[in-house]
Image (cartoon, rainbow, N blue to C red; front, side, top):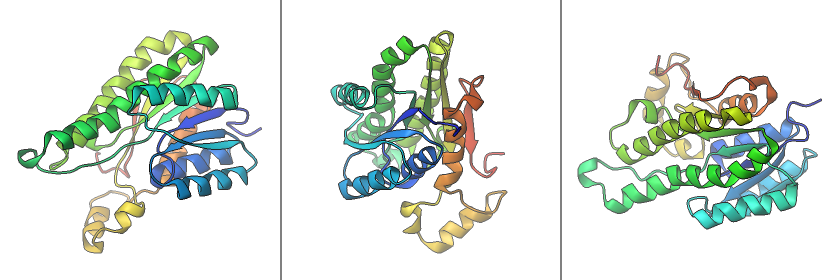
Length: 248
């Protein structure tokens, strides 16, 4: 039996990068996957077909979890289509970098809303069906930046640090109902976004990491797989770094 066979996962922001890697990995282990996208419809449909080819049920939803009503509707629609939601992975997020001195209120508000309020909205919306089932795993994608900060990313760091505090609080609130909540903190993960960066800069980052390489979406997905499965049934309220030792 596959680790996630007969389980349904709801995953936000899956059309590319880390989210896409998570969707493919969970499907490989038998999970049915409902996932969201905002702008990349072609990539979302492509992923949907790729997941189908693995023999699982999959559906792409155009939805913005930063909007409360949209988050509630997403959970309602997913339950109607799949019958249940066993695992929630809050992955969607954005960056709008800039030094604090030059950061606009819009840059601050939009990042906090997309990265942190979305986690609140979906976790609250999914709480009732999970409480009814008396089980569930909630996995929030934070960042090492939320642990140590980063110059030029005060908005992003604040949103990701907020996710950590939120994760621990939810774990304490829902643990008695067998609902677990953990956070995954990726470090330097090489995706389409990092591929556009200067190679010299990328190599400097790689050299600063004890394992001497950037991570891959699969490295993050492997941890999400573990936390989504029953292998982690006694783990909650934790923040696990996937960073090649860069914060050691």
